[in-house]
Length: 281
Image 1 (cartoon, rainbow, N blue to C red):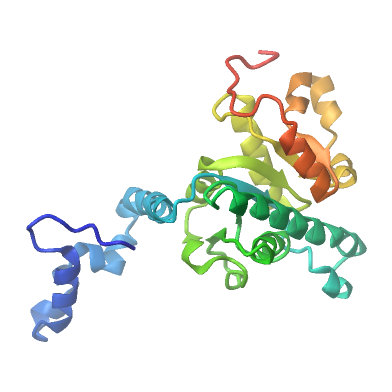
Image 2 (cartoon, helix red, strand yellow):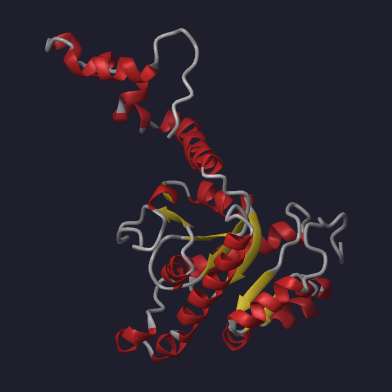
């Protein structure tokens, strides 16, 4: 990270280095003597939760600003969908069939990154959750195009390292799901959702709710795999019941291929507009 230290006072980094060379005494070994911002135990106290949350908001924001990332193409999707070359390792027949969307995600990310690079590479930078499956495909497609991509990882009990295709300087790790979700959407110019499980559904519905309620501007919102999404969610039943409005079903579209997605993005009506009223309320 760039050092913008310009004031005449002693820099915090200097004091952090100096504390590594103090005399070894009972006083200097005491936890109370540690500089607060270098004291891991202190930083993990319950009372410091607001500070930790702020740091998780600020660190990726500052680094993405420094990297001149202006807008992003969000790619949500399942971690359990393998590369088609590993189709035989899928846990279920359905997952084996869904491997086709690994290829579509990779192709879509490549096509969007190629477009981004033609315009300077600052806009429409691919962002994924940084893990395996569809996330890996998204970051991999950006590499195929010779571009960069972002990975927003989260610490999980079973989690592996970030996938190898995330741009290292744009690979982030989070403790708070809420902060991670904010970074997914703060720069979003396009949102795509591929088949997935609880996490994918959570991310999809949160983003749809923000757009539905006017808390977020409309962006192209694409659900890859009509058969999958119509099988697991009865969208029309929600509208028929009145729990959402028929107009809410126009906030997203189904696509099956990367080419369909690109065409839908180019023809999207109302992008950048926020709802002033919620239909049906």
